[in-house]
Image (cartoon, rainbow, N blue to C red; front, side, top):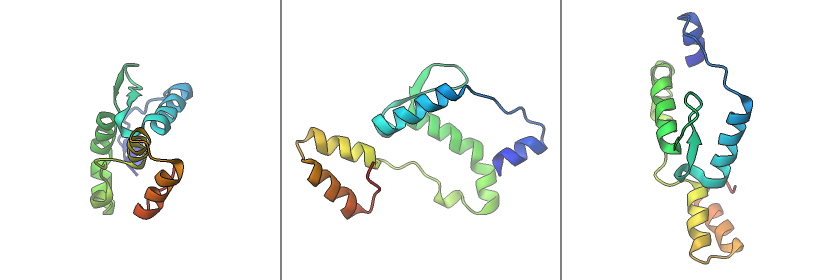
Length: 108
C-alpha cells in the first residue's frame, strides 16, 4: 500500500541492484537483527535494526491507514539471535531446536 501511495504522489521509487538485496537477505539469515545491512542508498553498512526502523517509519502512515500499525514492531531479540546465544553457551542442536519449538518461533 505504501508503494501505491508513492506512485500516486509521483514519488520516485529506487531501483536497487538485486545483488545488494540478496546480500542483505543473506546477512539477515546469518546474523539476525544484531548484524549489519548494506544501506541500499549509500552502499555503507548500518545496523540491521536501524535499517528496519527506517523502513517502519516509511510505511507507518500506510500501516495506520489499514489498521496494521499495532502489529509492526522490531523484537528485542529474534529467533536467530536466540539460536546464536544458545549455540555460544554450549547448547546442542537438539536443545536449540527444542527452545524454538517451545517459544513457537520459526526455526531458521
